[in-house]
Image 1 (tube, one colour):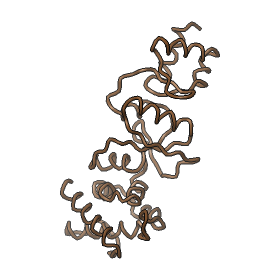
Image 2 (cartoon, one colour; image 1 turned 180 degrees about the vertical axis):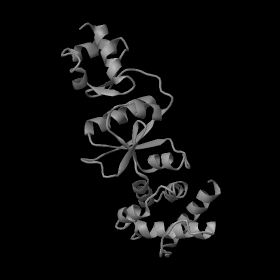
Image 3 (cartoon, one colour; image 1 turned 30 degrees about the horizontal axis):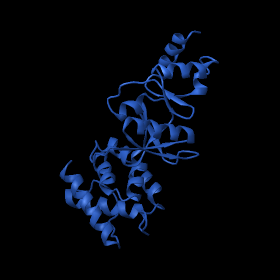
Image 4 (cartoon, helix red, strand yellow; image 1 turned 135 degrees about the horizontal axis):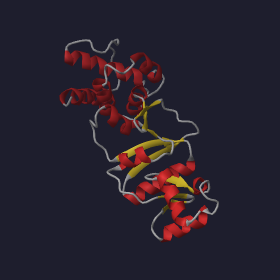
Length: 235
């Protein structure tokens, strides 16, 4: 196999995404040599130790994330932006992976592109997720819990409100029951119930079938109240 054939084979398999040297070695045993030669010509780009990409134009980070074949899950506020129609726009993309080397490669590539990726490494992804087109995205119930636990109440209640016909409240209860809002003793499920009660009250109908409850922490109550107001106002 000649260099040009090697380049064509790489493009066919990994165009738009990241790949390892060991992936390229499946195409040809002289992959290291060929990648070095192609990188000097600017036809492949070294991303990090053992990782390369073929230079491409991307519309935005979402375009890259969809085209890249590595296993990753879009999580937390970034996942919320998918479920709540980008209710709160952020330029930080939060991801979870099960490969330390891939985590470093994603972060390095994002830095080279001028993007901001926050990548978590886990032995096994702890978030429930589902496939949406070419992406794995944290499921709405799991996403609500993740956002609530990090004080991102507006993201969470926007997901609940916009996806009220899709969110499984019983599943949400099971996920949120023992999870607490960071740096507090307030359980996420209690906070969710409080916010759902406010939504029911302000909308004048019981769209969320939860028992009304109260919260002890005034700061949490105030922020949840503001989040609910925003969700209704900008729906």
